[in-house]
Length: 495
Image (tube, rainbow, N blue to C red; front, side, top):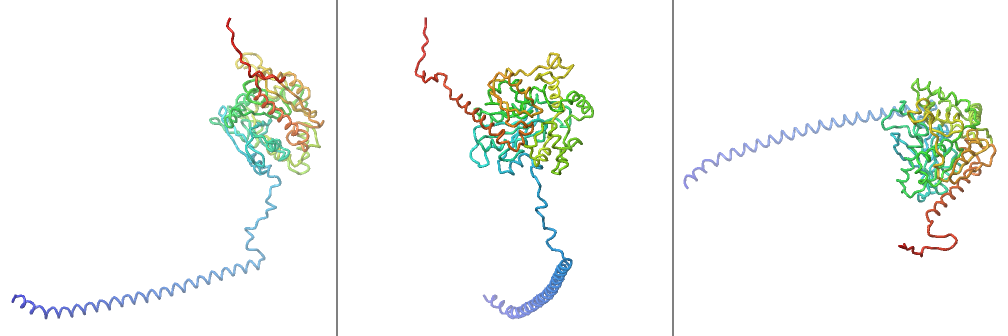
């Protein structure tokens, strides 16, 4: 214990001395820290003042520049919004249908438009659909397939606008309207493996469309809507050629359709009245020369001749020339001619077809009144097993057919239409358009289309679908004299 007391007595004075030194050190360190912080704060404040001064100077400079620019604009009489001002009247298209696609035209007029696709022998076939009327509602069960003519597309059926164009009229009347496009035109240009500039791609005529493409379209619609769906086919010009060829080559489609309507039927061409008849003999030679230069498409839209169809405007001189060319080929009818539609029609004309298609029609003109397959000349025996190409057997057609014809149609004469009528063995009827000047193109653009054509088409359609319904509901055990034998049980007797 005494050692501890002695230790405390010695260390206590030393501890008091050390405590004073530590206090002094802490005070010095604190004063140094405070001075450093003071210096930094003063430096920061001075820097802030400098930055604030700089920003104020820049703001003043920018403001002065803006006001100077505005003063210059005022002095020069310009409006500051001038670069963004738009003259909408100047930018508007005179007729948008001249530049729009078929879906664009249909949608512009307030109708629903769908695009459907099927692949047929590698050709990607796109076709358009108006599933219901402009008023809306459910999709009708009654279905119509529209097939365009030569050099054309699905636009043909909407060319005349709502209230007149047959596709719109049918949709508003309660039909589900489908519009097919032939291979090679602007809507069915693609192929799964072939280059569209190749000879192999363009090696087809309407025979191939009839045998493969339209059956594929019909099957697609049946798969899409149900196999019980009944379809009425309406074709114009080459669209009728395709119909009759298909029903002979693929007779099973007589049962898949409800009826066939042929507008300006083109089957027999021996009595064609159009001046193009004189060109038929040289068509094959022209095709051969074109093919030697590796051009297998007939007058492509971007060729020199193809561009002529885009030169017709509403200018009086241009319009007169183009109108007279159309009349010269198809028949003169000034009363039904809508001048505003000609540029639209020509802008969509020449949508794409093959030389082989044109040559096939030329062969029909020179076939001596026959409706026959493509004539390969010396290769016929190799291809068909006969010297001459086989004829399409119209006796295979069992589908009810309605033929619509006119007196002034230079491409579908009265003689040839009546010959077709007598060759058909199925239920058939003819309707003469009640206008002696009605021509081949008036089916598409006539001013009085509702009175002259559309109303009769609607009447015949209603009758065709009603007949189909009666056929579906027909009971083979019911006798229409009023007696019903459903209750009778037939018993097999054994002898």
